[in-house]
Image (cartoon, rainbow, N blue to C red; front, side):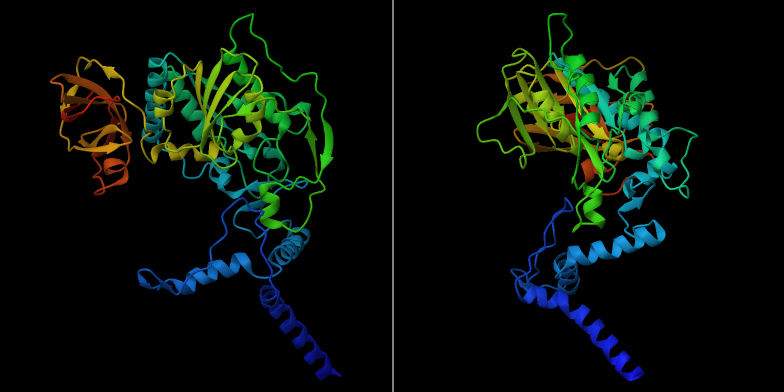
Length: 461
């Protein structure tokens, strides 16, 4: 009897192990519900010869494509959530009352690996330079951080993860630094916290704000664009949402991809009333524009991430012109080359990605400046390169401190000497070349279109 049970158990385990392979043999196709590209099938022989990474590449491919993957992943995580209230998934943190949180927000929540004061100052300087360029184009500039879900809903985080209250978050410290540099901001975190009593503002099992939260963000943006008493737009205050179920958010799909969500969310049923530019593919293009018949004389250029998805239909239906860009580093030549005068140029950046502001310099044509009194000449290296018809100057500057601004004197090919402020970057030539010494800083400068030249001196002031 015992031998029969053992054989039956062994046969069952073998059957379970062979089912994924059998499913693939009979044509199983993995669904992609995780908002990420699935690993491609690797080749043993490539154009460069033998693929020495084939074993690891195949392991990645099989992990994404094995038969009944969604069902088995869902079964496993359903068990761990039931038994331990934990996903055992490195990307997802299980909270209270069905809430799921993105693990990449834990550093902000727990106050781990905060940006240094110098890094905050450098990030603020970069945003200020974008603001100065926007104003040179006649536009108002505003920076905003879309708050992590656990910034708004810390009460649903698991008790074992303690929230940091001292010293301030990256978002709070960056906002303070931007205020010192006279950069306008929208404090979405304060607005959303103020409206928590209206109902849930984020999806319980998604990273992002829901339509209720998006309408709050949308109204804050529209108030900055439509400043005249004669301007009007739909604030959607009279629209009453219906509660629906079945929305499977990104975090839900990480751990329960084969299961429909039973959690409710507000659906406002707001129709989109705008047209995308001819040939634009809004779901695929990193940048695209829209037009509408409302507020024809108002235009917005919004640099956004995935949080911007929910506000695009609202903004586009109430503005004559809107251009959206997901390019990062930010490409402000869109404003330079669009032939459009924008009323507002804005950045929306999710809180967890604020450190990315230090990764490289934005692509922003520089605004000519006067060398300030008291500026000190510094040692530097320099090289020039071309990008999309613009000349970029980059290199290293010595004796740098975050309290200083980097001014580059440029000997232009038209015989003139001009001074521009450069972006501070944390690597040599925007990521190329040798690692920097402790007393060095990289810099990057994009000359205005049509101006060419080379760096003749660098000053700190």
